[in-house]
Length: 286
Image (cartoon, rainbow, N blue to C red; front, side):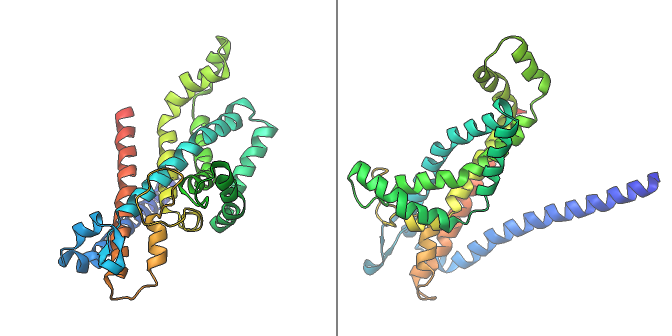
């Protein structure tokens, strides 16, 4: 019996190790694919111009800094908007009302993860954009703010579910000790739960930030797709993903088309930097 169990464990170890190696190879292959397809641009010496010039194809300029800035702005603001909401929902679900109200809210959050992104985009166009336009009386309403608000709603379920899992791992005896000392719910959150659940919270933030940067439909439909560097959150902007979606129909051999691989590589590196930062912070915590 013991030998059979060891045999099953070895098989499971081989399967999981193979899956991990395959994932790593696939991830590195995507990066290699981007670099390979970017070589024609690199050989012409235009890489620096693409990273610094404005986007003006009619004048022979194919720069993407406005898209990089737009991606960072929209993803960052969406994270700032959704983080406190997600943290509050997770605290309500896991600590304040883990009974029926908490379970109902968690089911609702899980249901939100199944809603197609394009539905959020339609809601943003016909509901959110007019509200922003009337409230601020500036521009068309298709702006960084509108895209960030809708993206914040989109990425909130990801953070809520990760935060709930992290909160559930906090030892019950710590929470009981706070209750025994007469601590409030907020003291329990800030002095006990967050210090112990910090690695999971950070992981949820990184994954949500990556999803915000990688989203295409909401940015394409709501951000306004301006190729000019934005000066405020009420300005229109274009993200790297929206830019790729709009340029991919260009002539296959044109420089305009080949720049999308530079966009993909930059987006890959931005996401990877966030993940590496989370890993380093996690190691320092332990």
